[in-house]
Length: 116
Image 1 (cartoon, one colour):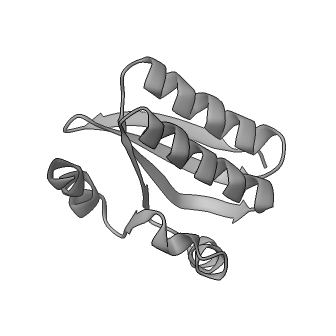
Image 2 (cartoon, rainbow, N blue to C red):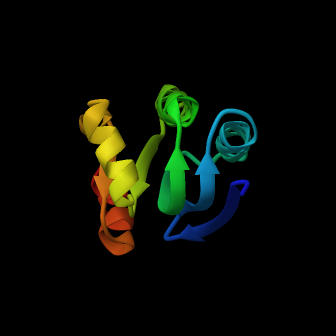
């Protein structure tokens, strides 16, 4: 199952609804291209909704870190939303849970950008 990304706007925040697998090859490339495309269009506040992501491999983790760094270097902010238990555990094990701003519900996630 390949990854799918739907993009929508809420209060000036770009929400990327991701579903499927973020893995070496197609999934991670898709994520990278989508984030770069958004930055190119001037969207600097990005919320990655990972609620429907079933699996992330090491390449996918690397891509999340890369996307985070790229957005930060452009003066923006990237946050994660709706982590599944698998993805949450993976971020805990890799100690990346402390790097990313992780939110559990969309309303508080969108509101958190205004305070950033």
